Amino acid sequence: MRCLRRYGALTPPYEFLSLILSKILGQCAALAALIVATVAPAQPQKQASWFVQAGAVGDGTSVESPTGSVESLNRLSGEGDRIYLLPSDAALEGGIALKVGQRLIGLDREGRKPVITNSDSTRNHGCGVVLSIGSHVSNVRIEGTVASGIYGRNVAGVRIDRVDVHDANRLQSFIDATFPTLPGRLPHGGMVFVHSDSPADVEVTFSTVTQTSGFGIVSITSGVARTRLSVSHTRVEGGSRIGFFDIGIAALVKDRKATTRLDISDAEVRGRLSPSGRNVMIAASGGGHGDARIKRIASGPTGQDGIVGAVMQSPSEITIHISDSVIEDAGQMNVEGSLINLPPEDSAQANAARVSIEIERSIVRRAGAVSGFEEVASNVWLGGSQFIKDGPPAVGHYRLRMTGSRIEGAGRSGLEFGNRRITASGHLETSAFDVLLRGNTIAGNGEADVMMYAPRARVDARKNCWGRPEGLAENRILVSAPARRSQLDAAEPLSCNERTKGPRKSW
Image (cartoon, rainbow, N blue to C red; front, top):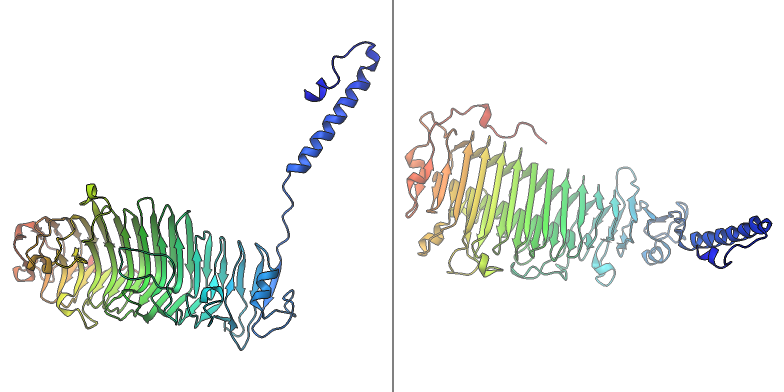
């Protein structure tokens, strides 16, 4: 209409009408074409491929002329490019920092993956690979880095496939993120992902992480981030302790608006053998929410705990679901859920913390197999932990559902509810314990198959096999006042048959 108004009203003679209209329409069409040309998105640039090889001196533009300089690669490559790491007798030194959407692909030789290392903390933070949004890394080996093998901060859409990380964090370096309710600074490790301000998902498949200091694989979530870490067909084994931290796979979450989900499947985690060793740990504080789904995994020897969920501060919550797995040979607890007695994030919700654990078709056995915690070794334990020495225990809610599984061979107890040390110190553990056990075999556990120290525990243990036709023997129950025997119902015992033999298939 503005184009039309420029010419004013149409007047006779009418024979000029078609000419005037054609001029008007021509100018409007030209204006529209200019607008389209101005706002139309630029055509996407073609993704380039770059070739890198340790010791090479080319320009990186072809497989015949690879570059050996990570600085040159960083200067020349662009977002979305593919980087091919070629095999070499030497490791590529200095690490690689990926840009948005870049893919790093290793080309192996006779089954040997090309190797990345970084012995210089001033180059790429001492890490082997530094991720960006949309990074994909596949078929490479990262070893001997002074900090993390792989490190990403606020990255989403990340996929790690067929990557081997060995002997990472050799200088026992620390990241710049904090988790104030856990003691000490947070260390680097094998694969470390830090999230604070946006949704993020990270997937690790068909990989190995071995002999790394601090963490094997960890996702650290805070602020307003909502994250998911998926680990499948992966082995995490061995490593050394840094302060409090000696953990195979971990998900840490803090802050009210932060949530994390940890999915582990078809995986093996073992060999964190220090007194702080834990194969899998989920920790929540500041009102954060953690959710773990663990299926078809093998949790092997570890210095302290196999799988542990710890609420550091109320009103945080943790949910753990374990199925078709074998959790065995922990030094202390094979499966643990604990409320820590640190000051609540919100005093009005001081008793709102929750830990919920569900175990299906699994074998949980031989807690206490690694020396150090024989006097407290339990296959499955729920209870309070006292980070504040002699302070009152945290109060909240525990929930356990266990079906079709085997609980056997613990050094001290099969299932334990409440902390005897809290009771011995004169405190009452007044958290609520809601326990349902069905179709399990619970037998052959050290001092007792069931121990109770919590006066608000309600244990529905009907229809389980207790290793004998008569059911649970009284000398296989240990109840300490003010808890009472009436809190446990072990009626209607089952014979030990195929329904109570754990996983239905192996991984």
